[in-house]
Amino acid sequence: MPVRARAKPPGEFMRDHMVAAGGMDYPQSMYKAYKEHLKSMGLEDGCSRASWSRYIWLANRIGLIKFDHAEAPAYWNAIADGVEVPANYVRESRPQAPSPRHYYRILDQNDPRWI
Image (cartoon, rainbow, N blue to C red; front, side, top):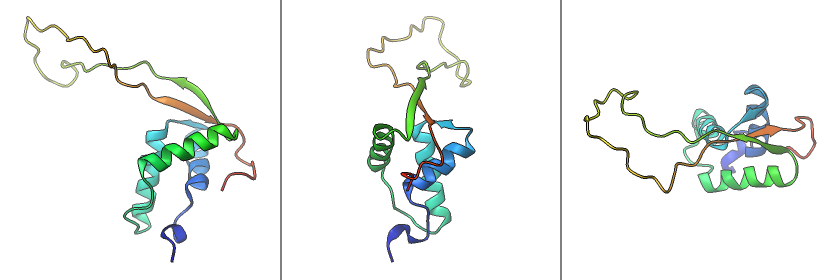
């Protein structure tokens, strides 16, 4: 029996998840939800992060989803995490800032290309 015979295929799950999330979400959130869906169906491994990125790229390329916006990158704030920062602490330069979340919007949930 194929790995996904008991679970939704990635495209169908992506569509249903984005509709349930209000029509917009970011890829990592969708990927984590899909992994949880697979685990709930008794499947340990059925999708890698690289293959999920490919599904996002493909859905964007064929016009099922569209890039909506990106969050501003957030930097670590020790005070919010409950760590006391020394008085002479200077935040080090971060030439490689963290990548912001990129939100995608579903264009048509009834498009027959969703599989």
